[in-house]
Length: 436
Image: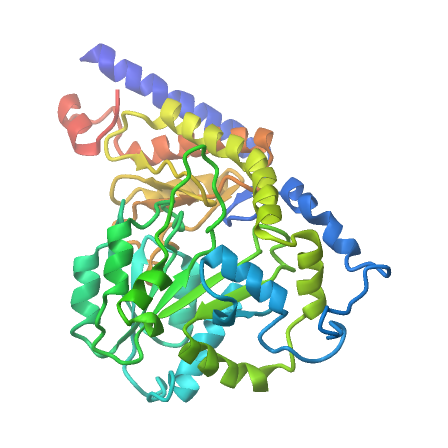
């Protein structure tokens, strides 16, 4: 027993030494957001010179992209997004650079005008279902509008559909649900076919209930065996249920996050409703930006080639994280992490009450992680256990340092005991889950 205690003490002392070293080194690393790295942004530098003077700004039908018009976006842009999402071009509205902006505006329109002739949400009791851990900016939109958020557990197949169905089909105040169905943020899981079918078959108590299907990572594979996602719109259409679906995606992590193109896709009824706002909101989107994207990425084949270039940069970073966690965290009781086939995140779970401490330790030593709790509604993780790991932005050498520090912080956060106390050592190991 003395030998075991000595070994554990040595491990913790080594972590403390490494931690103090990084703390004194003036390290400044930020892994708080899932941002493309500089070399990923450089893949789209051609956009900066498009459309060139010799390329022209006229479409085949004579429309001048420099002028007003086409509130639903360029026809070819709508067609490209339609192919990406598996819908028809007439189902697509191509807009500005941000799909999050389009989600926000959709919720705002529901509040001010109601959905498709329904009662405005303003003044009503409105609830949204929030699979968690999930995307913090989704939760930010709902909190901004004062919408009550309900945590829905998410597993390997997606949200717990028994709970989803119970709420949606029995509570008329439940107006929506947020979903990142492929390579979910932050867990990296992809919804199973059965989960998608159950979404498509929902029979909402509220006529104006909508699924906000944020398919941000539809093309963002990093594995030789990528996940496949069943087409929700097709499945819902088969059930006569197409009106409950809003689909969103963008080129944010395909070209430039700050200067890409976003879209919403929906049923004809919903598209008409959305355009009833957009026609007053703008005389047309940035058609030159849509045109330059089409000149660089004219079809789905070109988009897939671009994503292969992204994968070559991102994949080694994910492999480095998973290898480091395997070496440094394997065997820690209550510690687990996801192994996604794509997307931008790895989800790290710690024992209850440890995530905030680990994140705070990292920040003190110069490594900024996503705040503990950010992946839950209202920023509150009831277990204080989840940490979103975003490997893409740092360089590989920076990421290596960050991971060594992160693992030290996790181990120190788990070390809640003083070995000099008089409690039986074996009992302390069991109580605090300290690994050997």
